[in-house]
Image 1 (cartoon, rainbow, N blue to C red):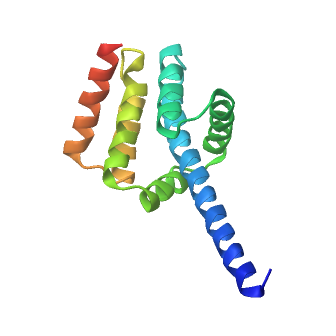
Image 2: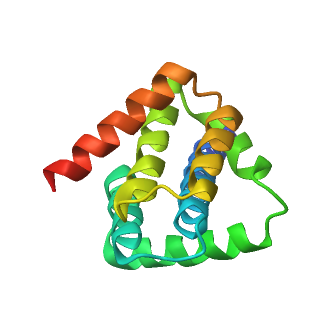
Length: 153
């Protein structure tokens, strides 16, 4: 293959690898925030676990094996992270506001899943909304949609 064709092929391959890495980083960042919400009240209710799994499977179109792997990795990353900055930085750098609001809705689905929003969950919701730059109106709209989603189930 001529040299210039190799360079073009390599550039396309590098770009695809970079896009794939960005997608994996975004999945991990999103999953880590959702995992943090599951553990925010120091108990993991089956409903919260189901909301976590449902959100990630829906958002990223994952099969069972990929979903299990992502959750394990997110739990490890969340446990070892000094805070939320690495996760929220990835989300802020990658997603438009509509997608950030959808993440807030997933977070609310988890917080509301067991029927009670604990003080720690409420605090984490407000903190994450600020960190991913979701405004007050969108924050409350996401909460309302999450509650409606859970009421339909």
